Amino acid sequence: MSSSKLSFVAEEKFCGLITGIDTVIDLSNNSISGEISNTFLNSFRIKLGHNNFTGTLPHLSPEVGYVDLSHNSFTGSVPHAWKKLEYLFFISLWNNNLFGEVLEILSCWRYLEVINLEKNEFFGVIPNNMSKYLEVVILRSNKFEGSIPSQLFLLSALIHLDLAHNKLSGSIPQITYNITDMMVDNYSTPLLAEDGNIDFYQKGQVYDRELDLDRRTIDLSANKISGEIPSELFRLIRVQTLNLSYNHLTGTIPKTIGGMKNLESLDLSNNKLFGEIPENMATLTFLSYLNLSCNNFSGQIPIGTQLQSFSVSSYDGNPELCGDPLKKCSMKKIDVNRIEQRMKEDGEFDEESLYLGMGVGFAVGFCGLFGSLLSFRKWRHKYYRLLNRMYDQLYVTYMLKFNNFLNREALQ
Image (cartoon, rainbow, N blue to C red; front, side, top):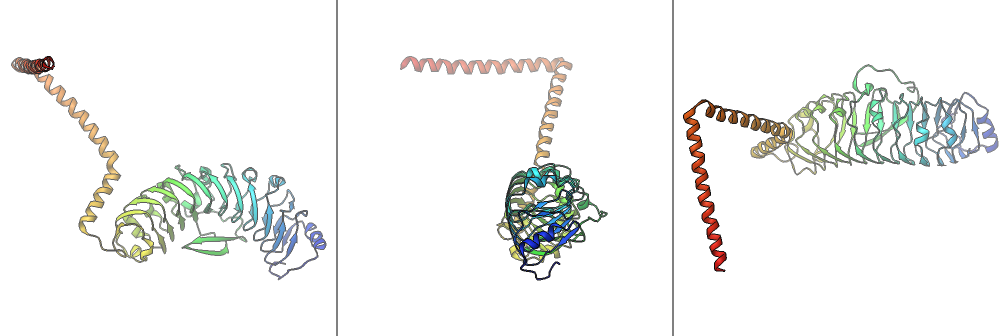
């Protein structure tokens, strides 16, 4: 009875009705109001999203697999008894008034494939031992804190990761990623293709639509994430939307970004990134939204129809950046920026080479000098006489200065 314009039901009869259904109950997209806090739902699939239910969350059967209670006005925390939902593979509590710490419960749902807790007041640390079958993780617009669990980048079936608008800190995990569905072209169709709506945040806008199995998204925006962007992140070549804006990221854009041939939306704005924009970004032919504003990028914007097609707003707030669509670059400035960039990129290598060269040079010079003295008797005698003369001169100079010092002291 979804989308049936239902608004009023007799509470007792309604609760009796939904309690007796043990397979699928679908009353989504109506305007049903009331409280079902004390109701025990036996259905395997529960779809009560987009209504006006109030009170705390209902009691659920341990056999439940699919739960959609999104877009209601539920309050309170997730019931402790929900830990026992061992067959749960889909849960959406999106857009309610729920709060509390859910990390312990998240770790108990071992077969979970889709989780959407967006727009609530949940807090705590995201656990590092969630279900290995996760395909969609949306924890957006809550109060989660701590670092991003490295396990999230080891989930082979993950296609959508949204942790935006929280209080996450630390750096993006510097590990070898194993998100197969974001790295290779062949992937298995998730079980949840048939139903499930998600808010997609891409190209600077919000799209409310059904889960798109061909779209790969990573959104870590509006947190307190610091450190450099791992080059491993840009090896996820199937990602189409990447948003790291409004964080405290530093360093340069890794050159591996040129391999993200499917990228359509990229937002790195409002960070502390610097250096030149990699030239291979001009080859991202599907890129239709770009925001690099409010950073410290410098040098010339790579020439190519793709990057020149964006407006000035895509590059604003980078005083040292130049080139179309911004002001023209002077040749001197381009050369200086390129030299500085190469020094930053190769500085460590050059420093190591310098020290290595100094060590080798000293060893060769030392062996050459003393080898010659040992081999040639005349050279050896001349060298010793030279050292004696230098010693005598230094001794006489020192004694004269010492006597002058004593005489001044005596006069005083």
